[in-house]
View 1 (cartoon, protein in one colour):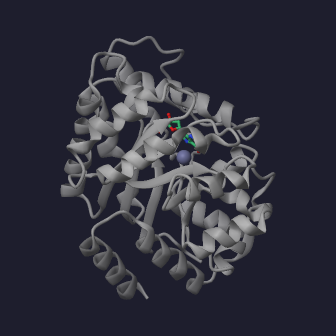
View 2 (tube, helix red, strand yellow; view 1 turned 45 degrees about the vertical axis):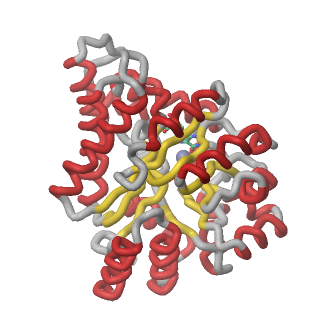
Length: 334
Ligand SMILES: O=c1[nH]cnc2c1ncn2[C@H]1C[C@H](O)[C@@H](CO)O1
Ligand SMILES: [Zn+2]
């Protein structure tokens, strides 16, 4: 199937993993920062996780360079604008971008300023391109939990003004949820929607815990429920959407090859599935490429793509007005 012109929805896209390599170079030069190289293809090679990447931990090391140049309001706005520009160019009509405000405080920005800067770039792109967007704030596992509380507080004033949800990202240890019950309860009480990275690297029980202990409405990845019938049944019964990022899962060695990825089986089994990039640069991909790769491995039908699209509309954290517009696009295209 040719996905190029079809409308798309991206629900799982990290800002810091989706910076154009040329922009990293330009920002570093502008900021007088020393770089290991000034060749943008070599910069790209430093930012893309290699096929030989041994694990999620190695994958996460690819974010250090882009984060180092994303420490000013101007840089954050620019990167946010460009991510929406890139997404709009491939007919992504709605995107939820996510980032961790706590990673952008190295040069004196406050969390509120970092969030405002990202929203400013997104607003400018929304005005210019055929795309709508919202922002998800990430709390990072493996760092002091107090930073999650500060993130929630910093984002509060932006709820309903571009910020829609809270996420937990970073390394995934078995049983991590028990440490985040209070944070997630607080997030919900404040009005944040909740999506949690879980079941990315081998532990289906983490998905069950994220739903039952934390109240996750969506799961980032969640792919390991394929190995646990009860976890899969829970995801289906609660209509929890999985934000599936196939290339990222191959890079982190969750699955050895695309042919073994459970995404098509999920779609055919009635699981609510969205297909996203995770990281446009670190995974060197686009939503169109992700769909092409799934299609090449499993042959998606148009009806299956419709299902993915509709499930993505249902699961997104947009207003009902935006959702209606996205569904109308679906009618228009087919
Ligand atoms: O796939 C992922 N799993 C867990 N954490 C991730 C993934 N992709 C990116 N991150 C981390 C690295 C980024 O610095 C952070 C915030 O975007 O989120
Ligand atoms: Zn992710």
